[in-house]
Image 1 (cartoon, rainbow, N blue to C red):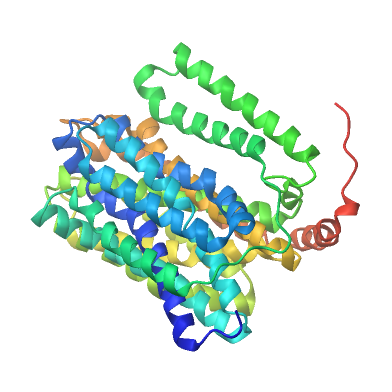
Image 2: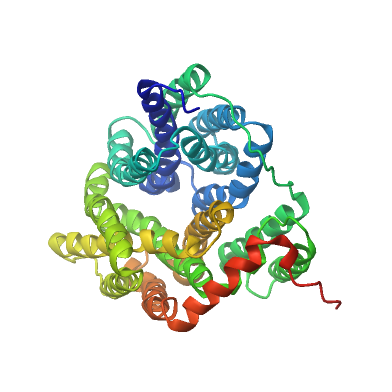
Length: 479
């Protein structure tokens, strides 16, 4: 791959960034369509949550498996399959006659999406081998995330306003078609020289646990917290989690290397990712309903009001990255935790007549805080890891982000279920949710100190040699 021309490398990077654009944009663009889905498909609050969560949950559950499959069967092949499945899922979403059909189509879409981002990053690291060119390529990759956040709500708002909510899925089709053609022509096939074993049992247990948690949070308010289905699913989730821990600890090549969690920076990065992205998921979901349902804004105006968040991520994510490189993760995490807490507290004080300038200010505070948190999450996750384990550690952090979004959307029903119904005081019903989000922000601020303490640094140093040499793995304890 070192003989590839600069032009071909640019086309490969563009193709990979196209996949990131559609997957990331679909995580935000659909939120703007939530009020339209509620009206046109007569969707309940729980069904609206599943439209978002089935997508993020499936992504979280399948990211690691897709990466391992690409290493084994070929990155270009898996990438093309992912593009094809994502396009098929998008088409099915646009044709969905009912809300249940839309939820099923979103699941298909997510299966394809799980084969795109981790595989595209693997392709980039294989094609861009020089330190400087790889850094530039990864920087472009990160910029696309900010662009997708800016484009998602605005493009979605315009399409919903002037065409139809189904058109937010049509936009994926030409992009997927172009990416499939470019991949076939320009992307070389590659496989890993040291392939990991697939772990279907560990994967299945993890998926069962995640879906059980989200099911209980979403369906609990409707079916009853003490109802038989809720209790059964709760037990299944607990058993799946306990079995997962025991099985993965005994496995030679586990789905998730549990010893990573002995590193305090890695463990705290996972918690921070869940807290930050739970707040983000809840924010996107609830504010679309607030702006269009409570404030009666058009979809276009709703998309424009999201712009401060996109700008916050686009501007402050790279600034945070440079700050982390110079002085460590603590300042960025502290700023992120404080700003997310402030934004959540301000959201708790919203009314149906809050001035528009105040809303824009709250969105800006939230955007800056959210923009500051991404770089320290990734840096803390891979800090101290041997080179051959950094990818796996980063993948766990990426999975934690998707899990966070799923949990945040699920909490909307558990803590603010009344706000999802009609003819209620939306802001009062949503207040408990925002107070919990403020708690998530405070957790991030506390972990900023914990993750960079001398004890955390020592735990990181103890872990590196342990996972660098498989022979040093502690013996399995019976019972």
